[in-house]
Amino acid sequence: MDKKEILIQSLKKKGFSEHILKAFSAVERGDFMLNEIKDYAYEDNAFPIGFQQTISQPYTIAAMLELLQLKKNLKVLEIGSGSGYVLSLISNITGGKGKVYGIERIKELAENSKKSLKQYKNIKVFNRNGFDGLIEHSPFDRILISAASEKIPEKLTSQLKEKGIIVAPLGNRFSQNLVSYQKFKGKLKLEKRIPGFIFVPLIDQ
Image 1 (cartoon, rainbow, N blue to C red):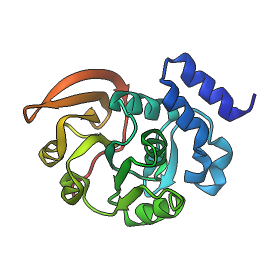
Image 2: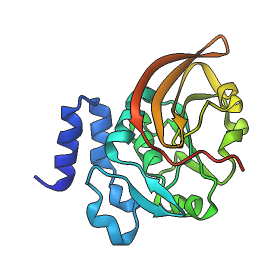
Image 3: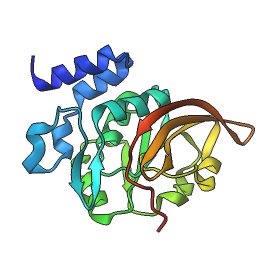
Image 4: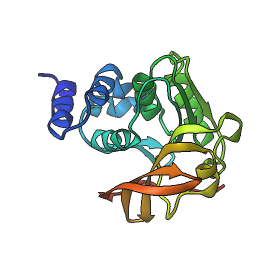
């Protein structure tokens, strides 16, 4: 059994959905990592991607994707899309008719991820402030915030569809809960909270 299969079996034992496991199997994580650490692509750890940012560990990503309750043909926005790896997984799950958008505030990472994602026709990456969301492509069925903050930015709530789901790590800089909310009558209702995560901070600039 190779390293990739060992990782996928580990995620399967933790109870993650079949469509998430298939996405991890289909997408090569190493394609989104620095050349010097590609050999570690299927270890269940986070790794640096430059500019003080990281590619999250597979378990963390799987937990976020599970909370998003993804299915075919959804329109999804990721804030803090970094290397583009999570965008590719979302694309794989939502299918060719899904629409996937990423916002990355660091220009070099945004450009690098566009190159890594060039074969994905349904993914668009924007270099801008994540706090502002992507008003011109809203509303979204799902929003994933892949960086830590104390609360959900109001502009992102307004860009989420009614009954849409938003997932984010919320807390202080040193410890966050991964939380999911669903939108009802314009307000966010807490659906689930998983403790014990550490993400890089969401920066307003």
